[in-house]
Amino acid sequence: MNELPIGIFDSGVGGLTVYRALHDRLPNERFVYLGDTARVPYGTKSLATVERYAIENSEFLASLGIKLLVVACNTASALALPKIRERIGLDVVGVIGPGGRKAVVETSSQDEPRIAVIATEATVSSGAYTDAIRRASNAASVFQTACPLFVPLAEEGWTAEAETFSIAEKYLKKVREFDPHSLVLGCTHYPILRDVIQQTVGENVKLIDSGEATAEEVERLLTDRGLANPNEILGTRELCDDLDHFYVTDAAERFAKVAERFLGTTPNKLEAIEVYGRDELKT
Amino acid sequence: MNELPIGIFDSGVGGLTVYRALHDRLPNERFVYLGDTARVPYGTKSLATVERYAIENSEFLASLGIKLLVVACNTASALALPKIRERIGLDVVGVIGPGGRKAVVETSSQDEPRIAVIATEATVSSGAYTDAIRRASNAASVFQTACPLFVPLAEEGWTAEAETFSIAEKYLKKVREFDPHSLVLGCTHYPILRDVIQQTVGENVKLIDSGEATAEEVERLLTDRGLANPNEILGTRELCDDLDHFYVTDAAERFAKVAERFLGTTPNKLEAIEVYGRDELKT
Image 1 (tube, rainbow over the protein chains, first blue to last red):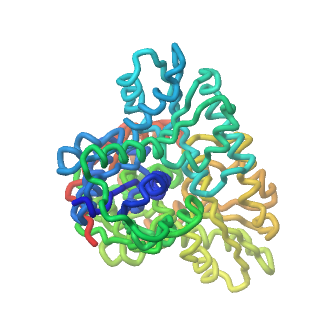
Image 2 (cartoon, rainbow over the protein chains, first blue to last red):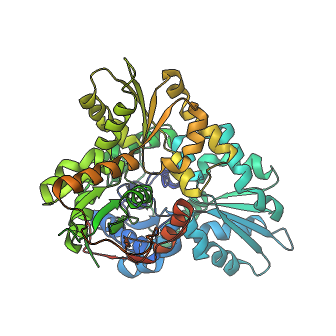
Image 3 (cartoon, rainbow over the protein chains, first blue to last red):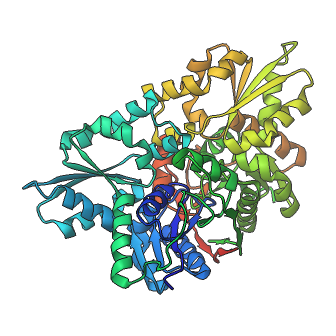
């Protein structure tokens, strides 16, 4: 069991930022990543649909043999975690709980901490981050807003363009008025735009990368459960090296191209899996 | 048969611009529209996946009883038309052929017409517009480019924002250098940004809306095949009135919200259909 890889799924390529955080923190672990590129994005879809997709992804990864499942997608973490846990006989870690808790910890020196959250429409509507933050702190006040264009901007690789700054200015105007102590990057694509976001909200606002927070929590969980890999991996671990497997449900070539933008490298082992079965549309 | 509605499908909400063009030109016809919002967008997905989705959508509409199928989605028209025709025993009209032919007609006064095409990555890669234009004219030279951010900008309703102009400036720089006589709006979302696009390329460039071209071709086809509705519809036809049915595979509320932005009204009859069956993911 301990030698099994850690499973990670995301709606697409954004979860690679979570993979990177896990990889950096846990050099002795192997990873298997599934990007559901045939059905990306999840952020504009309904609860029922996101649940269904999330369960299918989780069952696929479980069938490969994993010791722990990380739901890297914020939207799936916000909407589908209970259903996934029902189905999968494994520890499941989402990104919302760790991100929310880290935001509270990072603002714990404040009497009345103000925490802002930016995320997809679906994540914002779910109120999942607000719930996670409230569970960790009674004192915190929370402001959240959706930034729909940040995902396509990140995928286009427009990380320093004037247009990106201008759009960030617009989306984050109310965040600035709220004057937060910390700002949660509540979508896996947003760390790609970290510099733009930081400059827009000001250097005093602590940015919380839910991926990094999740990696810290996975590390603790592996220790608590005695699940860490006991066999030291020899040699240097590189991002996307032969020890990590990547699967996508569609368009592997495009995934590799965007991975290059996100990680500066592309997976050695990348496989497009076929989606069997058919959706039957009925009234 | 003649009294049956015309079926229209799109990957999501963009095809409403095609619905509007059909509705305006054919006030005596009823329409049934399917937006595959559970799996939108198609423009970044592979041939195999787009084909599968397109066939499922077509079979759903055929099962409702339609006399003709309009594939409003440019990407599905570019990639999946032959497979849809194989499966569906009905006339099928895509948007690419009509759009390409209209671009040629509109530039026929030129000795060496230059036609530019803007579309999704998948449509551009397919070369379908180039093929359609070449079939209609040996003389035309074609330049095409993808404008990925136009879709989310249209869905955000940012039709006059400075950022949209600035992004258009960037995407259309090479189009302007090509100095086209006409420019095909090769994605159903793009007519929403028509003013921005027209101002960016200059007033001398004739914009070709594939939706309008398709409506003209559907009108001809109904006449040729003797399929026009013989019973005159009494009273005033309005967009989205009770005579037209709309189905989505997910998130009806969001569809209605974006429809309001696109059409200035929302469907009276809008239904989210359940997607039965399950995709099984296997290696």
